[in-house]
Structure formats: structure tokens, C-alpha cells
Length: 163
Picture: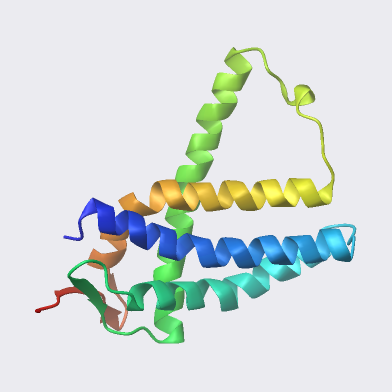
């Protein structure tokens, strides 16, 4: 089993490239182009899902984590499957955490009217930050499931590198 410290590192490697690219695109869409509406955001989300996210997964799983490597090197389709597993599970945990935070804010008497809309750039950067944080927080706990899962046509194997 991959030690927790290495799972944290893998979570970082799965998060920072996508977050950096996402921040850059959000600044481009809403800062430079001042795009109105949600069309550009939706197109970016779709493009990111099929390009950036699989690349980030392939990149992260090629890295050596301590004495461990992950085999095999993933194809594009395999990386989509591994990425999808992490994404939907992170989303479920993030929504559950959001529900808890919302309940705590409501119990403290803080309603949504107290949170002012900041505009598309600030709102989308905030969403990107929340996504990156949830990935960093939840991925170390989801990575063992990703590594154990028997995907259709392949499975990931944790291999100890001999010196």
C-alpha cells in the first residue's frame, strides 16, 4: 500500500497542473475577454475533462513515489477511466462537505444573502480554488481505491522499485 505521505504527494501531482491551467483559462475567459454568460465556462469544462484531466492523470501516475511506481503506463482511454473514478468520488465528498459547511453557516445565522456576488472572474476563481482544495483534501483517501480497482481491460499495479 502506498504510504499516506506519498498519497499526499500524488494528490498534489494530480491537482496543481490542472488547477494552474484552470486558473489561467478562467483569467483569460473572464479577465482578458470579459466573457458574459456560461457558454465559455461550459466549453472549457468539457475541453478540460477530455484533455487536461487525462493528461494530468497520466503524468501523475508516471512519477515515482518513494520506492513505488505505478504500472502500466496509461493510454488516453485508461487515463479517462482512472480520472473519472477520482472525479466523481471527489465530487460526492465535496458536495457532502458543502452540505455540512452550509448547515454550520445556517446554524451560525449566516445566510446566503451575507455572501455578495463578486462577478464572474472572482466567482470562477473561487470555484477553481474550491475544486483544487477538495481534490487535495479528498484524493489521498481515494487513491487506494483507484489503485485497487479492476478497470475494464486493465488494472493499476503498485510496484516496488529495487535499488
